[in-house]
Image 1 (cartoon, rainbow over the protein chains, first blue to last red):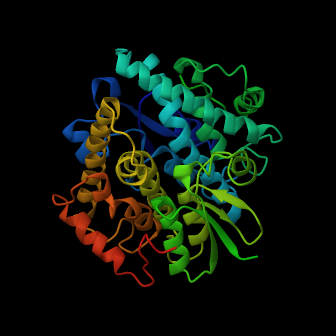
Image 2: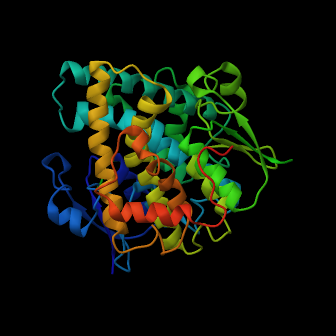
Length: 205
Length: 205
């Protein structure tokens, strides 16, 4: 069975997986869900694809359904040069991937979702919440900037799934009104990621 | 050099690491930081321990500083029975650990932090935010309940770091005003975790 990706084209989390699959040269089918229309919250999706109501979900060749973008990245990268093969290197890769899901994505991706994907109504309450996300998002970018000041990539000075995970929403941060002007090391790193062999843009299904 | 854990006793994220270290029989020193007093946001801490301003941070025998509780768990569990040694099993373990940091901790742990740890002032705005966290926290508990209805543990039907990660804040969810009454499978699983060999309570330093 071909690999299948339950996906949403605008999703940076989905893009992580599309990018790695393409760079690994693995063919896959893509099933598109309109999350704005609630297609990942239907009873059928919750029962048959992901009880947590989210994409991406990878359907493996054996028919196993695997949610959580960063778990999918590690699954696909296991045994390839995209995941370090030493214990500390693997842990450092995971460190940045957990940083991405806890300190980065909930701020930078969610700001983008409100302003760019969902066209969310900006109530007073939402505006206050957006300000908090801007502040915390810039803090996360600051942590990345400092780390990249004397490094080419996040772990072991080569391109890994830690870079893919952090690239996904950083390179479209402007769509959540983040300005990367003050983050030159991050901008240089974005350029290094986008010049990797087999790179595809987020708009490519 | 002995393993050192930069820690805060009330932290469930710190507890995850203390529990695993104890169950692995690894001796460690503990350095306590009062996060309520801002001790993880001082210039010294940001420069010398974790630029992201958070505990736990593990200091390895080689002096490497590793933040992110779930990355620390995988680092310590690597090559032990606490982490599955097959590719899909490892990915499923990570799936639940990313679920924990994205869908569970920001709701269940943060509600507990506000109500139990920081004694946060409950403004109107904070009360609205708490309601959202209650709703999303119960959603996460619902996903866990469904998964555990016909399983003993989260992955491969044996105790792994996925269980440790999810146990940490679930077993003190009442401190964030979550009622587990409607989640019998989760309650039974809590009992199985707390009867594992080498179990210690969250209050043990």
